[in-house]
Length: 286
Image 1 (cartoon, rainbow, N blue to C red):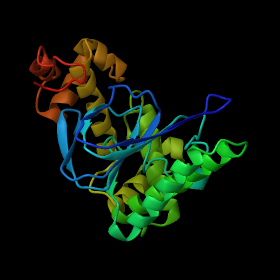
Image 2: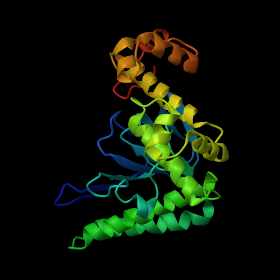
Image 3: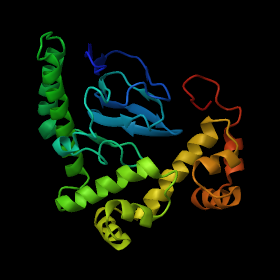
Image 4: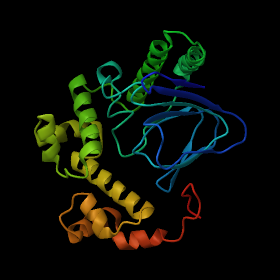
């Protein structure tokens, strides 16, 4: 079921049933995507790594994620573009920036707790009704449904990841830091860079992250850079020199030392591991 608005607004609801495999392109055609996996024993392949997911797991994807495929038998999908609903412009309403979207280098996902599963089910049913109701209010109603779904997901994710005990200002600092790292990791490599953007001191950022995560702000930056480096080494024909330049390093030697420190292997050796090993359109290792 699809909705196409007069100003390029796009929303799609999809339901997959039966014994089938759901494939995604490496570059998503839709900026934002929710995947609600309903069956047990599902697998998600992300950057060559497999995640085993329990039933009623919700996965939040953006154009920055590279998904090889999700192996499912039953799933509900919500796809939408910026024109339909921009989570950045409406962040004060839904507070998902840096949590569900445009945040961690890892894929945000969570299992829906049993006590709120009925809320998700009811909202999905209402969503399906509204997308089939063709009238002048359809766009407003569908945007309202999506906003409710995003808020519900954000609330559950924050509770499951112990974000709720933080003060609102601390939550905002973490969300904004993650968001800006996602936007600027190619050119800004130091904690001071992001402290300047946020008008905070590096010490303030470190103290907030110490309460929230085992990772430091610098680790977040470095892990995002090396993740992109691995993607480029594995999926593109660019040379190590070109990749080092694209990621903001002054020279190939500095990049190579950084990559080896983070990965335990040189960029050239990492790239050689995958040459000739990918032989299908989904990029699955054989």
